[in-house]
Image (cartoon, rainbow, N blue to C red; front, side, top):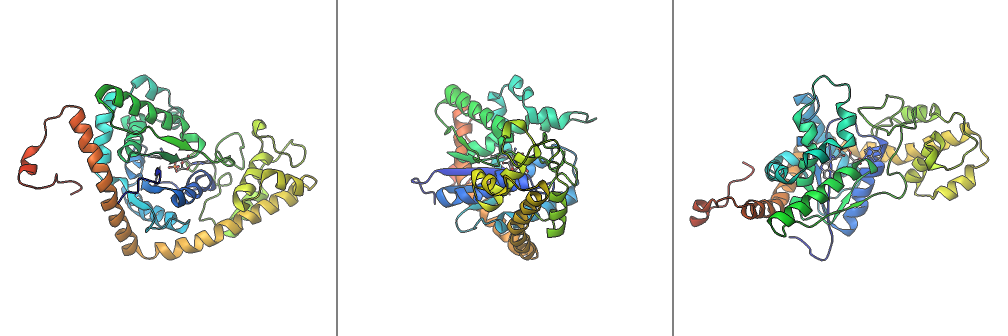
Length: 347
Ligand code: AMP
Ligand code: TRP
């Protein structure tokens, strides 16, 4: 059942690639916060993962890894709908229909496309049209709020444009969604190269902290984090410097304000400060890692939870898709209806 008094929340996260502290800050952490206030859907976007080179056997495993991680970071299957994108066929269909109202020029301006295609020998068409699939994900659920990190701003803007263009061209069909971004930690930077965002694909092993890293690995990474040529523990986000990034990380890990942390560490040496940041991240991630290991061990249960999630997701997405076909002028498949059968979906 949908609850109309609560805002509809939707977000997606890719299963492939090890999930980082950046994902925690812009993704997982916000999912749990919004779960409490909304009617929430969280989608493992496996269809997005095939747009760059990947291994099919790995995709299957990492889909279950991510399901376990979503529950380990605090999602509750009773409160939120957690499901895999490929289990709900409306997503792939919506992407095709929405490509009719997506601008080729706007897709070409997406910075993520430029970053991910740079230097590659083979660039898939899917990497280019990826934001259309994402727009469909969001719009199918009549979403109000989309919790995401800063790097997804441009994609969300495109989803809003697509919704408005569709509504204008074919009649009011979609809600126009808004993004929810963290006040602090919307873009966690690489520990070794603080001018680049922390990312599974683009960061080095030392530059990225993974959610399932061991405490020792985490301590080591923070010890060697770059703070060069800065003066003391001062927050200056414009400088895109290592120290400001570490302050943001510690604020995310402890829930304390940046001001509070500056007051404590303003006169401390970098060594002491980096050690404290590392310890705060160990404290944050150690219990998550433990819960992850326990949940991941029970594959059947994860599969069951995903099946339940997909069923709930279909009940919301399918009527929107039906409406899209209808508004766009497709002839109705009436035979099934005459005989009382539902449209076969997700078979
Ligand atoms: P992805 O793993 O690319 O599917 O991203 C999942 C979520 O994590 C998205 O909402 C991203 O915006 C967010 N995210 C990814 N990297 C970072 C980062 N370095 N800092 C903050 N949020 C991030
Ligand atoms: N493109 C997003 C990312 O790489 C993942 C995503 C796919 C998403 N569909 C979405 C995020 C819908 C929010 C809503 O991080």
